[in-house]
Length: 217
Image 1 (cartoon, rainbow, N blue to C red):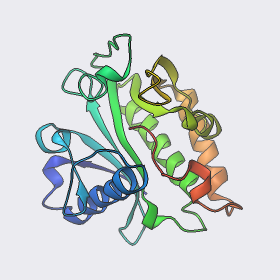
Image 2: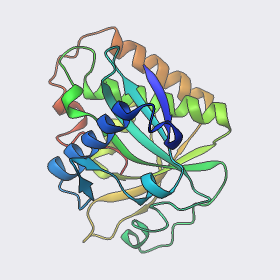
Image 3: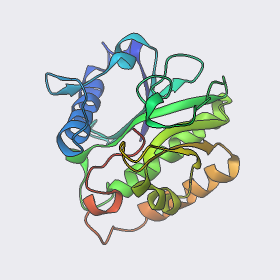
C-alpha cells in the first residue's frame, strides 16, 4: 500500500515517521557509510526539519513501512542546489515548478522478506507511485542524483532517467538525471509491478537492488 506523508502529519503518524527515519539511518549511515546526521538512531536533515517535503512510503497491512522517498520542489531549497552542487563540474540548473527533486530513496532493510516484499518489488512500487503522484499533480519531471550501479536497476524496473551530468571522479560514479513523467511510463511501471506481485522472487531480496538498498540520494 502507498501512502503520502507531510510534516503536518508528524504528531498523528509518529510511528510511520520513526520507521522511515530509522530505516534511513540503517541504510545511508550503517550500510552505505554516508556522512549523515543521525540522532536517536534516526536520520534527519535540515530539509526534513525546516522545509515542507512530501514523503511517499510503501506500507504493509501491519503498518510497517517497507520503503520511502522524499520530494521537494526545485523552486525552493534542494540538495542539488546545496549539498550536491559541487559534485559536478558543470552547473546543474534545475529550477521549475513542474520539476521536483527526489532524495532519500530507501528500501527499508528490516521489512524485506523472501516473499512479496523483495527490494525490487518495493522499489518498483515506490517508483510507480511516484510517477502516478507526479501525473496527478502536474509534475512533469523528477530530478535526482544516483549511483551508476542503479542504471540497470532503473532499466529493469521500467523508468530510466536521462543523465544531465556525471560527478567528478574523486566524488564517485554518480549521475544527476531527470525522470520524465508520462502516462506510458506509468503503464509500464504498473505492468511490471503486477508481474512482480504475481510471482515469488527466486533471488534473495538484498541482491536485487544492491547491498545498500539505496536509490536516489
